[in-house]
Amino acid sequence: MDRFYSLGHSSIDFHFKQSPRDFVVEEIPLYEFSGEGEHLVLFVRKKNLSTLELVSIIARYLGIQNKEIGYAGLKDKNAMTKQYISIHKKHEEAMENFVYEGVKVVSKTYHNNKIKIGHLRGNRFYINLKKVNPTSAQKIDEALKSISEFGMPNFFGYQRFGNDGDNHIDGEKIAKGEKKERNPKIRKLLISAYQSHLFNLWLSRRLEINTLVKNFEVSEIESVLNMPNDEVSKLKAQKHPFKLITGDIMEHYPHGRLFDFEGAEEDLNRFLERTITATGLLCGTKVKTSSGIAGTIEKEFDDEINAEGARRYAWIYPTEIEGRFKPIEAHYEMNFTLPKGSYATVLIEEIAKRKIK
Image (tube, rainbow, N blue to C red; front, side, top):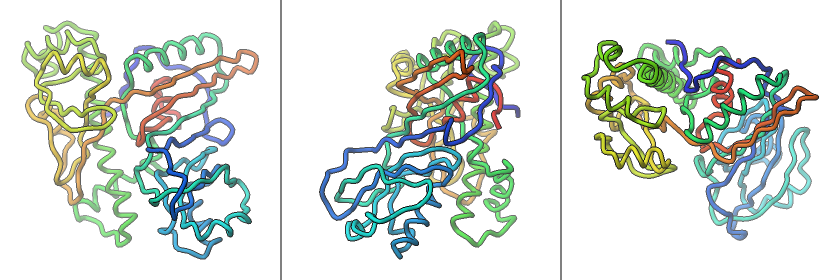
């Protein structure tokens, strides 16, 4: 299935390539650090290095194991990124003399606990698009305005699927026992790629349904969607561009409990108010699945695999969105903040309405 996009404009022509000059990421911590404790918290700026490469470099320098260094999330390699890491306070003096090309310790503080995966609120992005003409700049302005008002789909980015974009193929074979992978980290990575692939297919299908509902009359699409007339009418009446279907699993936003959508007007309003949002399935065990009509659609992109499943936000709300067109340079600069686990490249592709890699 081809990727579907949420915005209605035609594709926009511009040049973008991930690089430290044009792609800058700054991590937003989950909480304020206490300023005291046995863990040294370093705010580190790096370029052209992945988080795991950074961790290995510092671990080798200190003569410790990688697992002794804490970090909240994995940052892009082809970028300038700023993120927090934690090490034991006993290494503070040694870190005073740490020097490595492309790495700079910006600041330091202390905390009672080691930083763990997921301990971040989100990331702030600074993006530079090139070869932008005035017409394209205006379309980008309008696209950002729409995303600011309504949000955007939470696809997994191309980074999730490896350099060749086919990690999910091996992931499916491993998850179904058709292929062996002894390294537990690689096994988990590849299976996760397969789960992500199915999620993206499901989300594309839901965006396709949104497009049909928006552009055609109920009588024209009832048979195409294979839904009862009254359900299609309910979708048509919804104000939000992402149409909620009976049986969808919702979650409080930006975090909270899961619950079933049963068509209540109150929930439609809360969705518009951004206090709840829809979720999609990462297939596997021990995971809640959708019911009703939404469950029928979701089932097409479910699979029985030997891995733990989860729910993922299907629709997210970027915040603090800013855009500036620089006509002399033919550049367009964007700043925005995304919740953890979301991809800036997906936002760029939503605006472009095409793949950027």
